[in-house]
Image 1: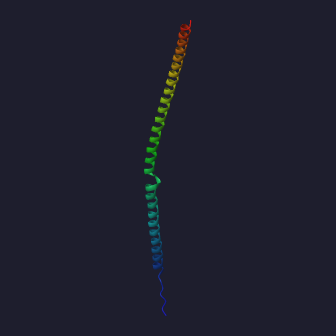
Image 2: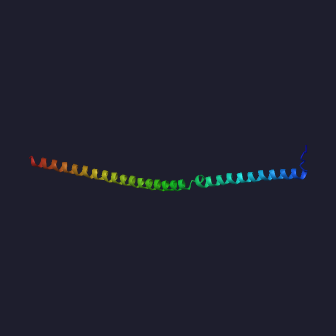
Length: 109
């Protein structure tokens, strides 16, 4: 029965090789992990497509708000003009009624 004796240097080399192998595997795993994080962030983290859509919708909302304010101003002006015309119409009716009353009073002597 022969016992194979491993020399201390070969044990140290075997240990060094194992440590080196695990270190390589660890570095490769970290590279893939952080690479995946980076790619994921680039694709979904910044959400560039969503940011563009938000900017587009914000611009659209602002333009609609301005348009709404413009229409409200127009409605206010139209209502003011309507009140003025109604007042003029009432004044004209009152004058017409007064003239008709004078003609009726003058025609019945």
